[in-house]
Length: 151
Image (cartoon, rainbow, N blue to C red; front, side, top):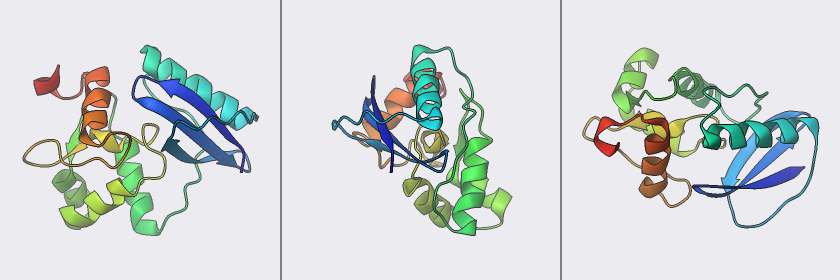
């Protein structure tokens, strides 16, 4: 599948698309130079996000997932830049428990664009499966001004 790379303040990212829709964002130092309208748009929006000029992504997404993960992804996409929610708050919205919400966040195939970093534990940051783990989550939240204890 076509993949394009970019360097960001939180490490190298590779964006993958299929049929004009973004399917994956991964942390990697490998470089990929594919180009397509969807990849070029995703790269431009990610660069604008890290430059502080983009507040909301507007990209066609097509991550592979089940219906529950789709609902969690929609809840994550509804969290505005600079704000956070807890696993429990999302669980309550979806009439489920925090643990499956946390598992869905951890398996998010499109981090940063689908802002799983904005979902926190009731007692603090919670985990993060991308980049350098919680350090990357902290860097993204600081970038967005979304966690008052980190600013």
